[in-house]
Image (cartoon, rainbow, N blue to C red; front, side, top):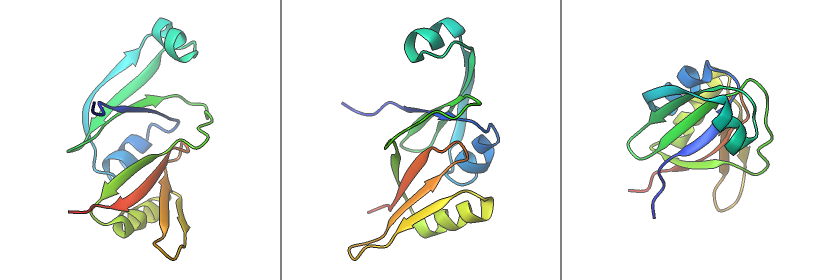
Length: 126
């Protein structure tokens, strides 16, 4: 088994460029409109929804542009980056939240987009 993609909700369409492309370095693959009947049947949301598919070397994301906040609970995506401190600096300079918990065995570092999607950052291990 392997991961094919992760689908998440975003509120701000501007996050596609500002967060996903500029900070996380995803590249656009394609976009489409999810028809109302499929949106209702599978997700319980009765409206057509724009979906943007982005990809990097190892991960594909489907971003569902939905202009209302949806609760995500403990949901998060953990990603490995070359330099998590540099990624955190880019987030701060772009106005995106950075959350850190100091610990003896290494800090926890999380970032968020403006829709509240949570990403845990880890440094890539070669």
